[in-house]
Image (cartoon, rainbow, N blue to C red; front, side, top):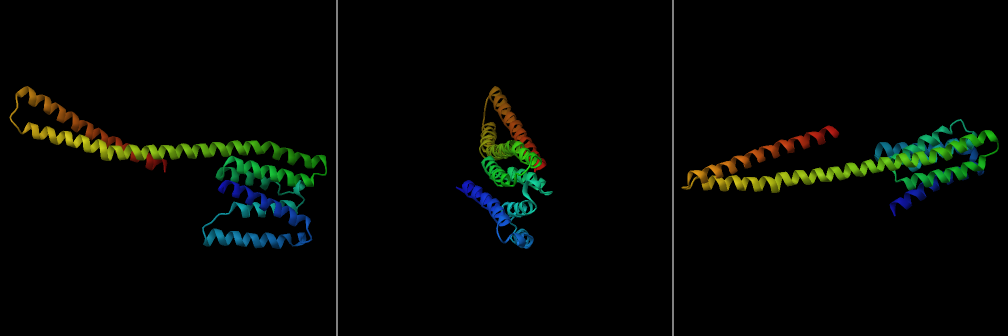
Length: 215
């Protein structure tokens, strides 16, 4: 549901920028850009909220106001798509790209303006692919973090508790009268358990260090 809502917001932002550029209020586009920019700055500084939807609206207003496909600021569309791709599911990026292609296609009036439209068609699957790879990496990192947490919990709780119980039981047995061979075997078990306990502590420290280095 959140993904669908995000797609709708991006499409509404793009469509709003296009409609403003062809409406009677198009002459006030610089003032509208300034107003939206102030809202974006306010949200970023005081609410700690970075709105890509407002960025989409601002870039859309700039590009459509300066003649769409022939705009000298058309390159901002590329930066927008890649930024969206790095922070949203691929379907969101693809939807925004297709929406922009349709809207920008309305300003297609020459062979020269066909070049930026064609480049947008080519860059759309690229941004989609990069976004997918980025999300896959995030999922892998999350899965690794969960696995790391499970390992540390197992080492700290179950394994350490079990080994300590073995060591304590061996110590109790060694304090009772036993045959020499029995004592040797129990002492060997106790020493092995201590060795495993020390190894687990070293492993836990290494995992913690690796996690800190990655952060």
